[in-house]
Image 1: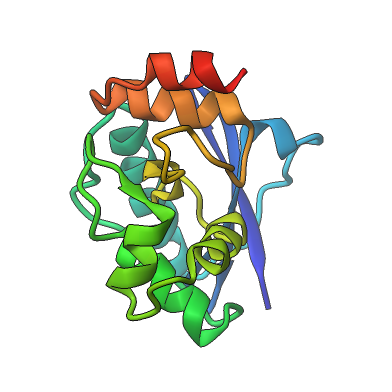
Image 2: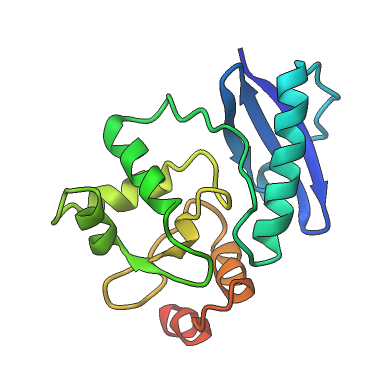
Length: 168
C-alpha cells in the first residue's frame, strides 16, 4: 500500500509516495495539481517524511543530502535500479554523459537505455538524474520540467547556462 504526503518547501509543494519499504516516488510541484490530504503515516513513514523533507531541502540548496530516506525502487527493472544506484554516486556539481553512465553499470553502448531509465526515475532530485547530459554536452532529456534540470545544476555550481541556450 502506498501513502502520499505533501512536502511544502519554498520551491513548491512536492508529493512523496511511501510504501512499507521506503520512499517510492516523488512528484514535481508542477504535477501536484490538488492539495494532498493529511495522510495516516506509520511511525517509520513519519520519520521517512522528515528525512525526505531534509534531503530535498539540501538538494534544492545545491548540496548533496546528508542522509536519504530508505528508497523503495522495487518497481524498476534490474537495469533501471542499477542506473538509479549509479546516479546516487555522482557528486553535486558534477555531471556524466548517458554513455559514461552506461559504461559505469556495465552496459557500454546502452546510452539510450540509460536515458530511458533516467526518464523513469521515480525519485527525481534525490536520485540526481539532472546530472546526466548528452554526449555532445547538451542538456539531453529530463524526467521533469527542463527548467528544474537547469536550476538544479546551477544551484550545484555546474557551469551549464550556455548548454541550455544552445539547446533552445
